[in-house]
Image (cartoon, rainbow, N blue to C red; front, side):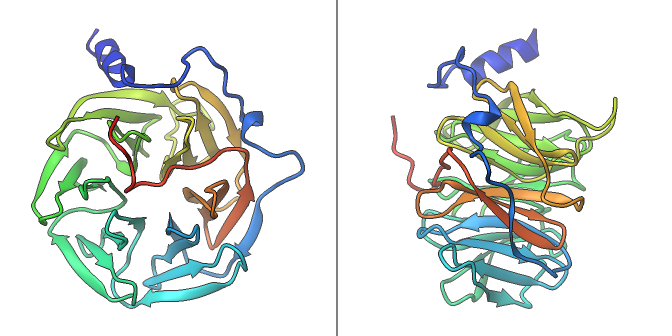
Length: 296
């Protein structure tokens, strides 16, 4: 009963038509597939999109933050040797925020690539930055989620998650979703006005290779229609706005699919980090630009 009540509360604010089917064919473009942009890295992660639609991603072991020019597909080094960044997202102040789990800190990169420590002494595998500047990050070893406020103040806002990994906000930012990579569910929480989380419930259930296998769910993104996309072992899984599974996009390669983001000037290209490379494909969907959400 508690889970059912939680789900009802989480979805009460949704503005999408609950009965409308959202098949994968509504997103994919016939004849289009994953296109390799760059390869040869040790482990790619953390795609993030800037105001112009360009993509930033990381090569975690090599401590590299790289930039893909969306128009030319050229890759350049934005920052290097400043910690093993794994998650990235631009904040409302225009800075690129990063999570550094090995170094146990949240950082921010300026336009010149120079890094500033925002908060330390916390697990920080992946992160999402809200329009009010609040940062939520996952702490796999601590089995919890942290909230870091713009002042640098930090607190634990969710616990008892076996292996929290990817993290994202719904388009209106009233719901936070956390991927439990050791299980098969994505857990949704209601975001309170003070930034705290309530009513955690396993709302999304991922497909897996075999019964009782972990999903290895990692990075996530959402689109303007309320669909959620999550990188998993079996591929890029897509859920409709009512959390029903719509389908699975195959991985570009058999390597580990770590993360996903919408990019391009119109946010209608999916970029994924997969093993040693980064890939993209055009879609019929459009992503959400965080940091510019207007109040209802």
